[in-house]
Image (cartoon, rainbow, N blue to C red; front, side, top):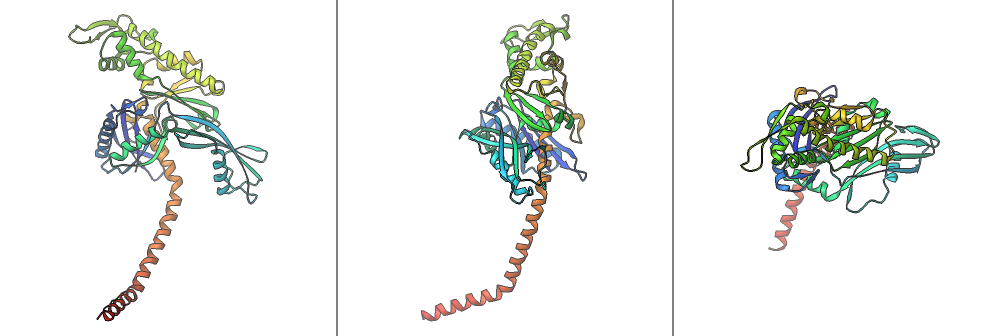
Length: 423
């Protein structure tokens, strides 16, 4: 069993996945609960976050019929930092071994980072052996000099520790802390898109997370602190209605392009206090929403231009996340970015497809996919450890059996000698 826990700004989602014999994932349990202790991907109230996690985990346990002990958890927020780094080492025996790969990765990550930052991921992009470039797996290849390009991702240590603290207070262990857009990429992008060059945009409630893939590797990550909560706030301010009603109006009636909304469709808007509800047209609501979506897309486009990857993503933009579900969101994105845009749903897991085939579950399904890959690579080492442990336990048991009579006799002799010396 593998468990993914997406601790988001608006909701906490817990998915339980089972790895089948053919290596595929089947989702056997789902739990979801609204999140009150998070803001823009960061914990602001530990007690509220703990309660939300507990409710989501209990619901998933009930559906899956199992006890959850540890989880893979997502992390996001404006505190996320990333950079591309380069390392170089000499190949020891003329042939690249696992030890050489580990050393060149260590050399690549030997860059100064702030003391309050914690490294989350070190993702290799490509390797160079002497003058040969573009190598994905250098093991067993001959050469003298090994180089590596890596993408390093770090986050604020206190922000990550607060998420881990909430999970541990629920009596759970943490198998891994995964960047939100990295997890979403696992479930939302195809291998062809990653090779050709694509930008994933995960638009949640608190943040819009960006991941740029090129040649099958992650090259750039960034976070834009404007997302669905700002859309809700705009509706609340423009229509003078409480936030909870603004959220309901957004989900039921909002449209990201005013040209797709009709003027004759009327919407009842609850007022503040005892005032009578008012009626507005859906077109007027769409004008408010469209302005905010244009701003979100413009900020993402500015980030892409600043990073230098705006012209290097021929596969276009892939949007996912709960806020991307709004009608007209993909069409408006195509107009702003002037490149192909598609709305993605997670498709790397079996079971309960009628529920999880939704952009809301992109991160949580991606956590399961990431966890299954990590477990698959760690399995051989675990088997070796278990065999070694079994041998150690067997030898200790044999030693105890052969030496039990000797040790007991020795102890009895020492006791007798002590009594005789004091009598």
